View (spheres, one colour):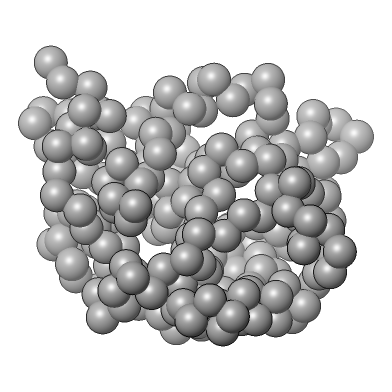
Length: 225
């Protein structure tokens, strides 16, 4: 029986946002604790971070900035859902972010159906979130889409089927997406357990091995590079 990783590797490349934006217009973005430019500019709110992203895209003649899988970041320190007196700090990102413009369309990268959805309200959280369920070669797995617009979940129904390449959501703005610059958090999940409309997208270093196993690199599916 094939593993999920081998199945993902064997699939053709696909897109998860606006099909009109070619991969040549994508640029890798490092948001890790080692990014000196980020350390110097220190954007500390959504507006400043959106300006940082826009400037980065313009300087590189790009339309989408992507990256962040298994990336240690400082940007979560501003929210108590990632660090407080009762929980260990979570600062390692376990999905792939695609940064762009508010309203950018989100596409089903492969055939799937709606497993669940929820508005994960709160400073630093996902905001509107959709989880799709997929089955390929008898292997069931899930994809999560976070930081969406409210319209993305308004008329959604569990079980609705979306075919590969079909638009089903859009990027939200900072007022609804947890106070982030517009982007999509895209994550692959092998075993979703009992989660509904939500799943951790950032983890503590002590849990990293578990999440690497349960949440393989989304670029295995997208094949941006």
